Image (cartoon, rainbow, N blue to C red; front, side, top):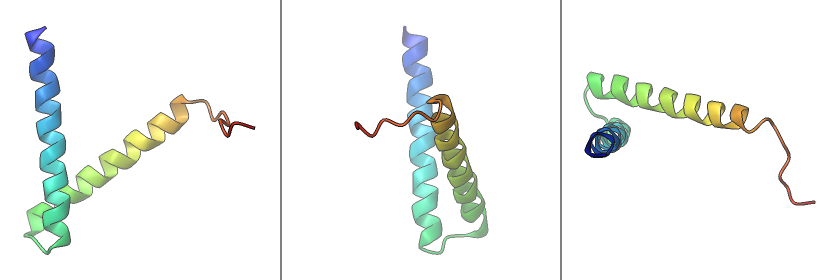
Length: 63
């Protein structure tokens, strides 16, 4: 169980670092920060697309 907690903690730290890079890049950080921010944004878009695809395109509007 402690290994799972370690992996989840590392994932949270990586996500927080990516968020920090996005904020720093928006304020005009160095060039490498813009690259990390772009990678973070692309990863978030891929995760969102995978989530939408995994739902099967069902319409859950509640009609």
